[in-house]
Amino acid sequence: MSKLQKSAGTKMSSTLAEALNEQMNFEFYSSHIYLAMASYCESKDYNGFAKFFLKHAEEERQHGMRIYKYLQDRGEQAIITGFEDPDNEYESLYDVCKQALEHEKLVTSRFYAISDIADSEKEYATISFLDWFLQEQVEEESLFETIVQKLSRIKDHEGAILLYDMNIGHEEEE
Ligand code: OFO
Image (cartoon, rainbow, N blue to C red):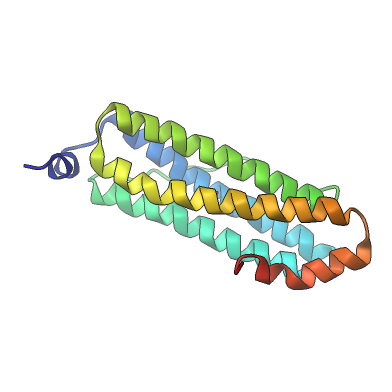
C-alpha cells in the first residue's frame, strides 16, 4: 500500500480534524468579512470595489466548502459554528484593503500551522490537499499587496480613487 493510500484510507487524528474544521469555519468567516467590506464600499459608491469584495466573499465560501467536502470524504463530520461580528465601519477604502491584506496574512499563517500538524503526522493526503490553499494564499496576498500599494500612492485624491474603482476588476487579470 502506498503512503498516500494508507493516509487516505485511515482516519485522521482528532487534532488535525479539529484544525481543518476550525479553518473551514474561518473561511466562512472570511466570506462574512468580505461581504461587510463590499457593503461598506457600496455605501461609499465605490461600486467596483463592492463588486470585487462580493466576488471574494463568494470565493471564500467556496474555500470553506472545499474543506467541508474533504472532511466528509475522510469520514469526519464538518461541525458548523458561528463567529464574531465582522467590522462594518472603516476609515477609508485604503483602510478596508489594508485590513483585507492583514486578514489574508493571518489566513496564510493558519494554513502553515495546519500544514505543520499534517507534516508532523505524515498525513500525506492532507498535505497534498493543503497545497492548493497555500498557492491560493500566495496569489491573494500578492493581489491585496498590489492594491494597498496603489491606494497608498493615490492617497486621498478622490478622482484617482474613483478611476481606480472603475478599473479594479482588471487587477485580478494581470
Ligand atoms: Fe480562503 O482564500 Fe484567502 O483567505
